[in-house]
Length: 561
Image 1 (tube, rainbow, N blue to C red):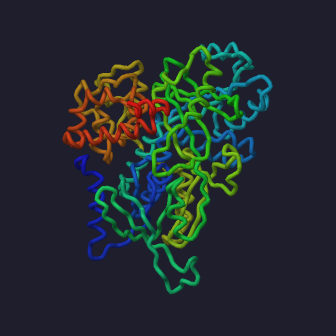
Image 2: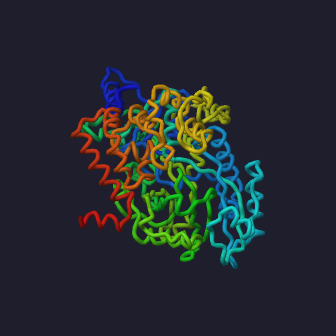
């Protein structure tokens, strides 16, 4: 792999050289957007043998796909809405990901707390769970009375509770899932370039223009390198706009009205020592009866999420508000009053913007549909909405819509339906038996490494120093994998490394400021940064973390200093 400092710039140079060659053939598919939807589309296109490229204006998974609630779920709510087909598709995809990516997508128990006088009650909810399990082909649902609930969650306050219904869904590191899918696409011949902004669409007037919408066909996209400011015109048979909450930027250039309603979902990360749980707990918030989750993630505990209209600039990091902090803490205090949660207990926060397709923006945000939509124009496809779990199905819908533009018969894709999203591993935990490990559960940690990095896990640790394999703080991350990601995964900024390639910025106090000082030499070497670049990146990262991953009250304190 090339020097980490030039990885993205090398990708840009490859695009530049290709575009400036004598007779550059157009790409089959250019995907705009480096979240899970874009990554899934690239994966499907590459698997079909198409010449495919993905460009992302910031970093891969920078938007919603690194700031979700981390849940790979089947959509239990859709059963209540009698949308059995959607639920079945969702649980099938959940089970697929559990099979293909153990250690990255993991089954997790969910306890739906039942309060006195609450609807739905035990009988109705457990009836829904029986259908839910049946559609997935598993048997996991159960019911815990208060005594059993207190045994499973010793610190919970069961006052005014009737017990909890139990079922299983799954949890993941969303950003790492994006990276695994991108790596799979690249292995099949696709190309990617982050910090490459799609500025505008290119259009060709045709002899048959009277038959085409707007009298022209989209034939490519003009992209801008975020570092040099250079621009390129890239031609393609199909441009796919998969930019989530940002899709209207390109879509409105093709004479369409905006239909996306950006909704912000915010979360708090607290130490496991404050609320130690092994299952996700669901409760209806006392203020507005919205469901809120409290769940284990990466050795910490997460409280989320909110659901509010996001009116800020989409190109600025979204951030939690003081009202959202209080809202989430109030929910946790209801079930865990003895934890005495305070703002000072919060390690970090994060907020993501969900792309919701809306016809009525006055509608309650929580009642908006999370289904995806695909809009098709000549040479140009836009997709938005949907959820993390069904990214493969969304990608297949997009490729089916693109089939006529690519001269591919839609039925030719059906044989590929059962193919894996992530390739079968050629290594196993046995390859790491001699590796030192300082945590409690070695087997789970080894599975975690394989799930997160696939076959690259062996490379990460094959030449690592023993000191680099020690766990960092209370996390499950090691310096060895941080340095590998720095060298091999298109890291251009420190926030790429700490907030998406790893989650150390979410899990270490003050975003890992103290730890960064202790490993400066190793990271500078891995990243190829001199002292000036390091200081610049530290300043940038600190600013981003204070704004978008801290708390509003702490931001004010820092400004005052």
